[in-house]
Amino acid sequence: EAQLVESGGGLVQAGGSLRLSCAASGFVFENYAIGWFRQAPGKEREGVACQWDGNGMSYYTDSVKGRFTASMNDAKTTVYLQMNSLKPEDTAVYYCTAGRIGGCTWAWSEYDYWGQGTQVNVSS
Image (cartoon, rainbow, N blue to C red; front, side):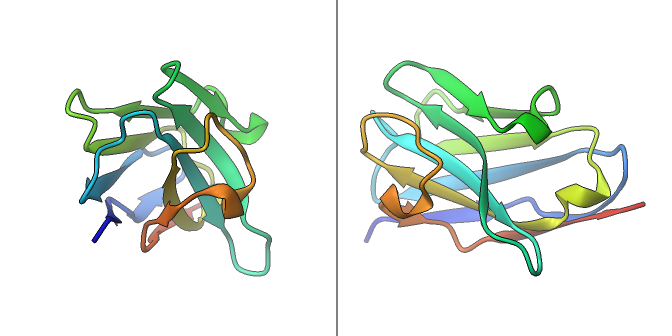
């Protein structure tokens, strides 16, 4: 059964860093778009980063540009979200998603697979 397994969340002080991992099970990320979304309490889910294996490009929402970096291992089995200079407003549950959808989109419903989510808490 294809699934995504996330890890790497936790508690960090403002200005600190965390790296989230998302491992594919039952498939590899060849020609997949991998989206990273987050949802804070009382807020709508928002896309923060997306990487598309088709062109090797990564895209970021404005609030995380220059602070977050998405990457993939050479085997295309695991993707990472490196989060630096974290702010309290980055506190949320973070989800990785994957889909063979021809490119990146911020429409979370377009993706085929979802990770279980990992909590990120940034203290001030």
